[in-house]
Amino acid sequence: MENEAKEPRISLTEGIIVLLFMLVIMGFSVIKLQISPQIPILFVILLLIGWAKVRKFSWDSVNQGIINGISTGIIPMFIFILIGALISSWIAAGVIPSLMVYGFNLISAEWFLPSVFLVCTIVGTAIGSAFTVVSTIGIAFLGMGLTMGVNPAMIAGAVISGAIFGDKTSPLSDSTNLASAVVGADLFSHIRNLMWSTIPAFFTSLIVFFIVGRTNAQLNTASIDKTVNVLTQHFSISLWAFLPIVLMFLCAWRKIPAIPTLFINILVAVGMLYVEEPKTKIQAVVNTLTSGYVSQTGNKNVDNLLTRGGIASMMATIALIISALALGGLLMKFGVIDAVMGPLSRKLQSNGSLILAVILSGIGVNIFVGEQYLSVILPGNAFKSTFDKAKLAPVALSRALEDGGTVINYLIPWGVAGVFAANTLQVPTIEYLPFAIFSLSSPIFSIISGFTGIGLKHLKTRENV
Image 1 (tube, helix red, strand yellow):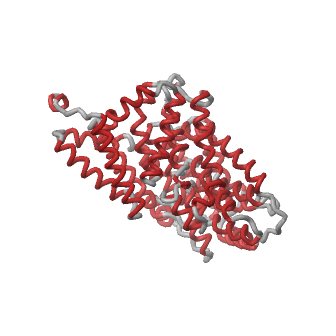
Image 2: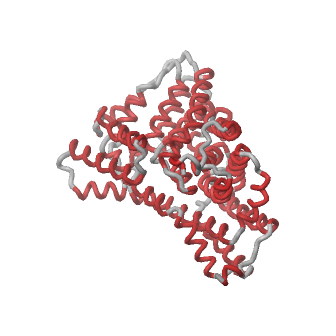
Image 3: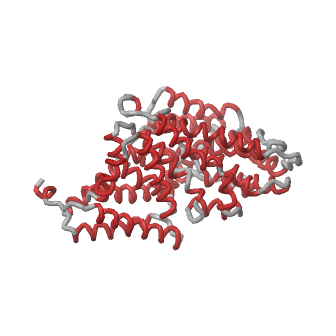
């Protein structure tokens, strides 16, 4: 206790300098040098510890800050491990391939853009990865649309909007799990609460694509038919494959926590696999759950889409989360966050202004750093105590983090997601930006919710605590 009493206090000016210096280093590393954020975060932690020692913080404070930060993510990181196993088991059991086949049946020539948007939402929700949707069926849809004379920027906007919707609402999504983890919210409560901004953004996107996307051109379905044939030949495609999906929704409806829900779904998927292939060896199942499913259909696009999952696939993300949470814990322990957020929180008198501040912070991190995970983690750590004081539930903060963080990264030309989408689809970010309707409208509906109070959860509601 004596050591804690002697710890120095950080001024507002010093806190701002520390945060800006940190953002400049990470932004330069991710944007200019184009390196993954794990090492820049560790370097920033090293510099932060050096600054803390110069300011006479104790080693106990350093250690406790790291422990406090990482401890908040233990359960979510375990969930990430289970999600890796679930993805690979769903592919092996034919769940994800079946969703793709039934989704492809929705493609219409006359209503090409809304069809693309809807299929990307279905596949994105099934696999929980916008990057995978964009880099696989997104490329296929782009080629189909170009042969019909559709504006490539519109096609890219429809693909990205649908992919982000799926990524945002899927319990398999790492960004969705991260947003709930940072604030300590239940995963399924977080997903349910997302609907207050996600559903309006979904229908806004759908309406816009219906208005701008009608065409009289003929649709060449050769590439889709080829993909469907490959999936049908190599996987068990049936309505029974929707059983784990239904089970997932039932568990969410019954408010069963994420960990038992994921365990149940993994067991059901493995059981389905043995029903389809009774001679499957236990070693093969274990390898699939551990290292991921390896698709060997011979079709490059299908194999790229379905070679994924496994516990090992989550390790890089877990390393990033551990590093970022440690950084957040240190910033909190050293009082940097309190020094900067204290004066700001006193000026934020309404719930709407709090939501607006979180969303603008997420957009700011995306602009200055260009990394979607950090656009969730940094504002999440900064505003957590402020939301507690305002009696707002953790899910209120986690929704604002997603609406201002993960969905915006695709609109930043130097952002990780923006660069990826532009390079993959060969459409500049600035060109598809006006048609990425879902990304543009999500923060707007979230801000409206904040100022009107519609769908804004408070701590007094027991299920949202």
